[in-house]
Structure formats: structure tokens, C-alpha cells
Length: 212
Image 1 (cartoon, helix red, strand yellow):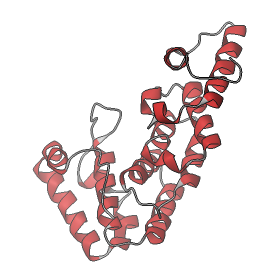
Image 2 (cartoon, helix red, strand yellow):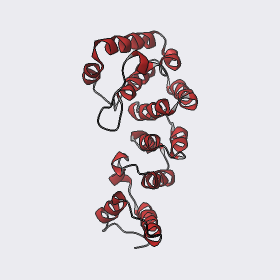
Image 3 (cartoon, rainbow, N blue to C red):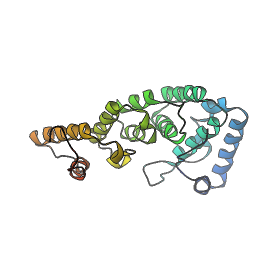
Image 4 (cartoon, helix red, strand yellow):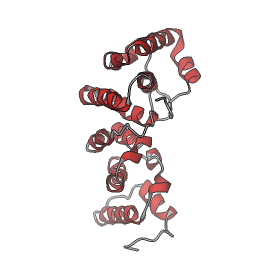
């Protein structure tokens, strides 16, 4: 298994890290090449050995480092072993580590890696970073029902719908009905309707809606 959706191309990541950060990253990658099960030891402290910083697109430099570490471990682990490792990292990690796990699930695309339970856990929180990461590429593992509720959760907590992977492809009449009810409830309560909800309904006005 390899990274399909890295947060940064390898050359961009290394340029952003600088010499000391690159040395730290390369040391960790070499360790994982020899023993991919060391991921659990390296992942939490990865930022201390490399760097932290804003990538300017809603992600962090430490996210990109951790996703690359997962990619290196994935090269030597089967789907079940990788998912077990990621589950442990998520379960015991802080919010930053949980976010990186969710992003890594979307980056290591393999039919045998199904982290839907981790996505659903993230969607039960009100942490906008976790909700946004949960609705990335790995959200294709969510059922239509759970995915629709993930989109609603984005509207509830203020995650831009631009963070939702394949939103246009997966939007259906039931989602539109849910968003319309949500908008009506906010209007009835005298509260503003999020611009993303307005845009979604306007852009799909011609879509057949059972409540239309």
C-alpha cells in the first residue's frame, strides 16, 4: 500500500521542513522501513522531531509528516494490521493526532482498510478539525445515511462544505430534503442559514426532491 492522496508532494514537504526537519523525517522513515510496527512509537512525537506550521489549506505541516509516516508503515503492513495501528493511534491520541489519523485514512486508499468507525467517532464530536478530516476521501466508506448526516454535521459546526469529498457526486434528493428542513428550522428560529446550505440548495435546484 502507498499514499494515494499525500497532503504535500514529497519534495514540497521536505522544502517546508528544512534541513533539521528532513533529517528527523528520514530517520523515522528508515526506522519504519525496518519495522513498520514502530509507527505507534513515532507518530505522537513526530512534530517534535520535524516541525510544526500552517500549510495554508486547513492542514498543518505536522499532519503531512504524520501522513507520510503512515504511508511508510503501510508499505510493510497488511490492511488489518495497518487499521489496528491506526485505531490505537486514534483511540489514545490527542486531537492533533486523531486528525492526522483521519487524514491518513484518506491518503492510504486500499479496499481492505475501512476506518468508518473512526470517522463516525469524529463526526460525533464538535471539533471542526476532526469533522472536516472525517469527511475527506475516506468518507467513501460511510453509508449514504451516515455520509448525509456528516454533511449536516459540517453545517451545524461550521465546517465549509468544500471540505466534503465528492459532495457534488454524492448529493441526492434525501440530502437536499435534510438541508432544506435544516434551513427552514433556522429561519423559523430567526437564525441565519449558512451560506453553504444556501449554495448547495441553489446549485441543485433542478434535482428531484421528494419534498420539492
